[in-house]
Image (tube, rainbow, N blue to C red; front, side, top):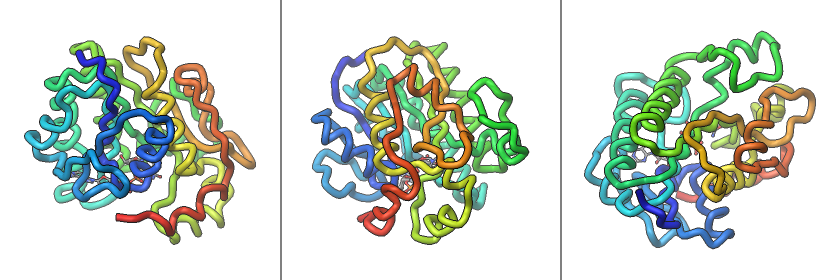
Length: 253
Ligand SMILES: NC(=O)c1ccc[n+]([C@@H]2O[C@H](COP(=O)([O-])OP(=O)(O)OC[C@H]3O[C@@H](n4cnc5c(N)ncnc54)[C@H](O)[C@@H]3O)[C@@H](O)[C@H]2O)c1
């Protein structure tokens, strides 16, 4: 396995990807990007498709830590969007990581994997609570979590799964959050997202497999139990809705 410091961010040109790249750069951690399009502000980036294994294998060779963000990031047509990007793409990313000798994988899951407990008001939702996936998108994230466990145990790769709160990608989503108390409580600012992934990449704790939640600080009620993220990788959110949401307009592609 590689002890190279370079972190490969797959999905580096997206809403969360750009925040992660910026935070890694701020910490002077070497970073390589991978996305369908070029990543602004990042010279070392591979333009490729996660459904194609060869592009990924090239990018992952010699990499120590891989952060996997690339996906169709919400419910969408299953056969044409979720199946290639969130199922086939996950297979290709996991295989590229294994073949490339990646030591730690950090996988972006979603709070939507335990949706119905949260909407029933049984709060806070904890990692050990049984999942209740919202729909197809959340079901693909269950697949991601499950195969993450399989690769940790079968191949000795350290795997951290993070169930993320809501980091708005559009002004419309930011408007939705502005008008909903629960959405404000699961809000994840780009800054806190960047800090979570940087903490997970930097921690020296020996982790075989773990699932944690990550969001910014809730305002009204705690929806996600953030203690495991604090204990495991030292992540403590620094922002609260609407801090950081003004940057929604600023996403460059
Ligand atoms: N933003 C949120 O609220 C949120 C919440 C929970 C989980 N997540 C997860 O976090 C991750 C990042 O989400 P985001 O909000 O930054 O989404 P995003 O759409 O802004 O970014 C996703 C990136 O992945 C890239 N991508 C998609 N398909 C690809 C492919 N086939 N090959 C290469 N690159 C591809 C896109 O070009 C894009 O840059 C996703 O896995 C998403 O499911 C996001």
